[in-house]
Image 1: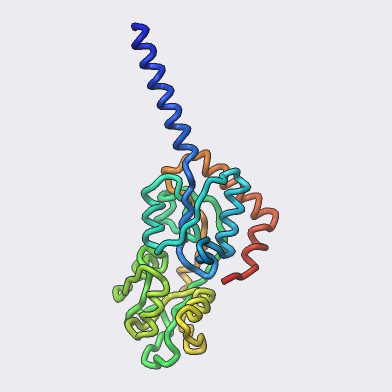
Image 2: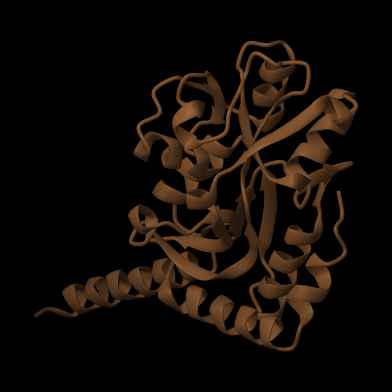
Length: 248
């Protein structure tokens, strides 16, 4: 091998190493949707779940990050397809298990079907009853996926939770699945007295934990650091104390 070929080989190896180092050092993009726990406050993303994520990344030494609020389907798509994406408040379901690199559970949630209290024509006492009505859901959300597995076909899909809620108010759908905190927050956003909203059914099979998780193309070293930091914050009670602030 000639001297010039040796130099070229060394140059290629150095370039490859620099490129690999650059990939490791890429900015983490933390993505979520607007919820009572994750919301825009001026130009920054605030909320208790956001605080948990930021404390986790900082404790892990992963300080080069940006947090974004998107429609859920956009956040979900980014976490499926792009490296160094951290999605949070995502339900950990069996179909999703191999689709993400899971970090830790931030909170548990129960979902309920709500109707307008004035809609006495919407009578629901069982899951079978609910199948007779149109139900508003968000694209790629766990509630849409759960209802589809239960044989629901009259689902009306929206990109954002407030759009979905407005369809309920305008009687474009009969029911929407929400958490209690979601219901309260959306009433405020839509300027609706929450007394006009009625919970009619608990979706027992949809109860789940909401996690933070990385895209599968994120380096394992990054995931390992975040997971260790989160486990420590959860063990010492930091996660619980933050989430108990009930912001929103």
